[in-house]
Image 1 (tube, helix red, strand yellow):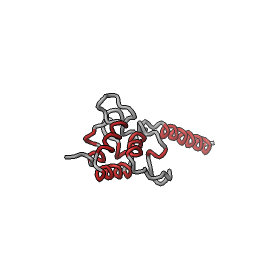
Image 2 (cartoon, helix red, strand yellow):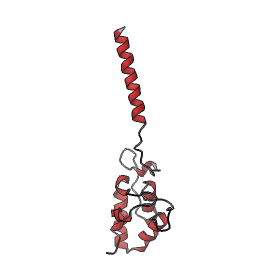
Image 3 (cartoon, helix red, strand yellow):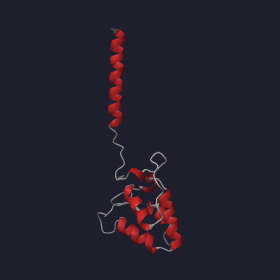
Image 4 (spheres, one colour):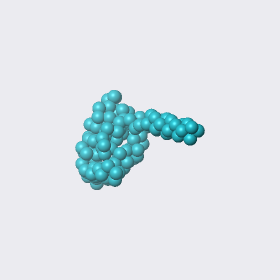
Length: 129
C-alpha cells in the first residue's frame, strides 16, 4: 500500500511539473513564422538576400512591425525604403547580416512596434556615417 501511495505521489508531481513547464510566459512576441527561429531542426531554407525577404524576416521575427504605430517607426515599409535606398555594397552587407542572424539577435528594445533603431546592428551597417 505504501508503494502505491509513493507511485501516486510521484505521478502527481510529474503531472504538476508538466503543467508548470507548459505554462511558460517567456513566449517571444511577434515570432509568427515557423522558420522565424531558424536552425537545423526546422530545416528552414536560408533567407533570400533581397530587400523584401530580409524585411519580411524582421517582421516574422518580431523585430519590426508590418505597419508601425507611429509615423516615424522603423516598420516594413521603412525597412524596404532603407535597404533599397543604400548603395549596393552596404545593402548586400545589411541583407547578409539579417539573413544570418537569429531572431533573438534581431529583436531590440521596443520591438516590434517602436524598435530602437540604434540597436539594430545589422541595419546600422548600411548607415552612412
